[in-house]
Image (cartoon, rainbow, N blue to C red; front, side, top):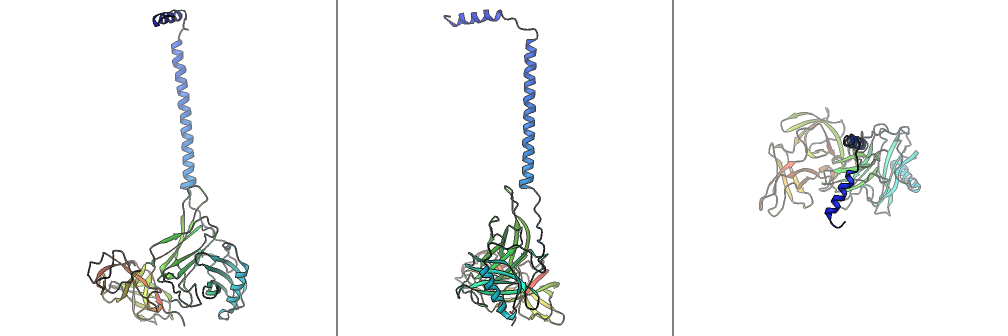
Length: 424
């Protein structure tokens, strides 16, 4: 065909020879409708499947119930926990020998190890043993190496075995875990916290009001139940908190906190914490009761995990009762210093507020800076110094005073610790 006109005319001629079936147009429309319907049904089914999959994923991955820790069956009077990491048999023998010689408590029998390894954080060995002493009592002991004696093992504490049913974590916090027995570390960050959690815990966090940071161990590590953290010398068991977490083995699963408890204790030579319960309040003072024959004396500091509560001003040893001046009371005063920068000063309560005064004119104190009060029971200005408060605002240039905000919640006190000198 020579042009488009001839092409059009030819197509018309061809079309005229085709006779469509009666009702053809309606059948075509019905077919199209059926196909569209099937496509809609298929698309809806696919969407339903996708939604079901997404709901299942959210249930399984994101919102499944938190796993419940099942306490391992007790091993008689001992913790029935599996060991952490590889156990060095030589370390167990050495630690048992040290245990037998210390305080003439040996020989120990039926000894079993919870930990016997070298820990990179401590840069030394850590051993935790359970066993019977010569009196037949169930005991638990912590050992660490002595950096001044070729890492020879030293027993740091020997305690009664804890309740094997209720215990979820055992811990030790002290500045006397790296050198000779009873000796304070010569490092300003020489306090160590050791925590060992029950099986099933996949991560442990050690936090202290002596430092503004937390640490969470990787939950999938082979020794994630054992954590050793290095802390400032001011840290004590009473101002340290141990938290345990679990993490299901599912994609995108989150850590779930299963316990949070205070640090248990220190070692020989550390100040003792006498537990006390708040039973009354009279204006700017609280009344506490404590176990008798604990050596509670006037002038001892009273603390909670968040920091300093006050000072004992009167003691009734017969009733096991003490009166405590709160840090904001007009009867409270003492010497303090800022953390890290060591800017000195004195504090006093005004009846509702807490002031730090006598600060050198060139001493810089900034808002939220931590202020510490030495604990007379520690016989050191650094070891066990307790956080009394934080600066409420920057100290003005040339000023000699700054207001502090107490770190302890003085309005909601129920249980406290009275810091007493170490036992003779």
